[in-house]
Amino acid sequence: MLAAGAASGATPVSGPETAGPERAGPSARQEALVEGERDQLPIELYRRERVRFDRIRTTGLPASYEARQAFWRALLEASDRWIARWPEREFAWRDRLQALAELSEVAPGLVEQAADGALAAMREDDGIRFLGDDTRLRIARAYVRHGVRLGEVRPLLRAALATRSDDRARTAALRVESALAIAEQDIEALRSLLIRLRRGIAAPGLSAAERAGRERDYRLAAAWLSRFAGRTDAVVEQLQRAFDVRPVYRKRPGARDAIQPQNEELHAQGRRLWTWSGRAPEAWDAWVGERRGFQVTASRGADSK
Image 1 (cartoon, one colour):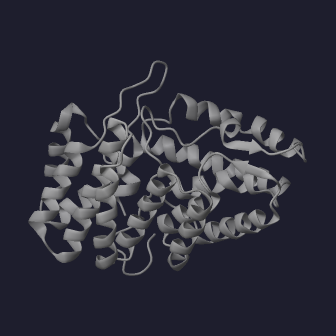
Image 2 (image 1 turned 45 degrees about the horizontal axis):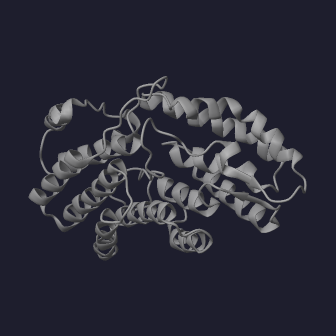
Image 3 (image 1 turned 180 degrees about the horizontal axis):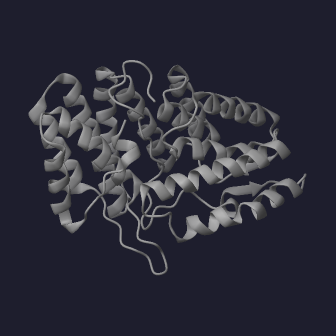
């Protein structure tokens, strides 16, 4: 749930754009870089226990919203064991934070507990460095997703970017910041973010899917700004542009068919904005089904918020 005054329901916050079926992030073997030989045994045990989740991520997460939620719920439950065994290790908290950021409904206390535990573990500095996103970025995503401690999000993002500030990290942080501005209905912040989002579309070296994803994010943020300003026609125009430019991913050999989750969020948020503009939800569903022959099924969890 969002904090009081938020526009509607939980605010989905997506991770980095991926080309191909949705990848929930690097596998444990890819993302954990152990510096030196000090105390490597816990991370190796953790890698072996996490292998079944890595296998699913490698082949692509399930196509349906419900099945993906079940995956994240299972990962959340598995993280109970890892945290019980290694409460002072940062790696033990990272999957829990990611699962909390992806699940549509969790108790706010779980988010706060995981954030506090992860930050305490980071202060221990066990010598392990991660090739994936900064743990504080995961905390910020979980906070915005569930409307928890929103006042701490921007400091967390600044701290995360002080550690890693490449284009991928900046883009992920910008998505979180955009979701925060939408949750807080902060018109001035959204206007400022739109300038940065627009600039990111023109960044050199992007793949076609990455560039399309960035323009989709820009158009969706513009639609929310129009919503808060009461400009109904502009909301619909920006939604249509967002859907026209969204990336459409091809199925890789051996991978499951899957809707890329950032696009599912576009559909869920778009449907709410479309309905607010006075149009029937059924008209949105029909219009979506015509776009590039790619039918996006509304996710019950996202649309019900």
